[in-house]
Length: 193
Image (cartoon, rainbow, N blue to C red; front, side, top):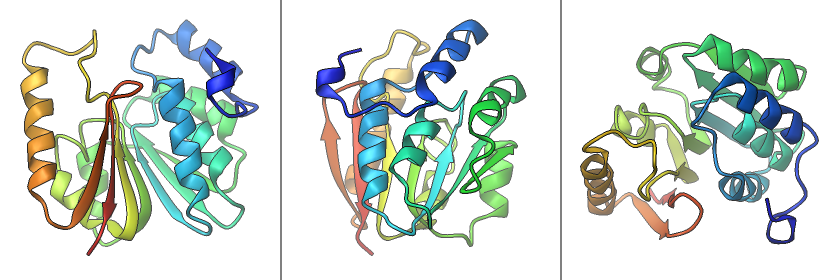
């Protein structure tokens, strides 16, 4: 980790990172991505935040660190073993709702809700139910995805899925995108209407 190129690390990050490594969870967000999430979160005072794919809470702690006291974050995951790590370290934060659920079921049940910031770090909201999730974004809201550059844990053929996702996002006229060849490959979109 190169501290000179990232901002101060949230208090819970190191402990969550240690537990993440012990748990065997191998899909944690890159620290540079996390730093960007914190910065983007700071731009939405009083915002409603959604994280699809909590994992162990590494990115969650950074998002919380950027949020103000009037903001709220819903973070969902379908793996209890990993969500328990996030809950242990972050569960006392009243701005946070950690939800153990299936992504598709949660999205379908909450389609009327609107958010100012959506970090889609799992299949749902990225490769599945993308339109539904983008419809949940307020005008001016951020849609953020990572792992868009080739990753060692990608299954066979995933590169085609990633290219198709980028092409589809490019084809939409309701979101302005920046594709960053940085960290694990981050795309930041802003809903324009």
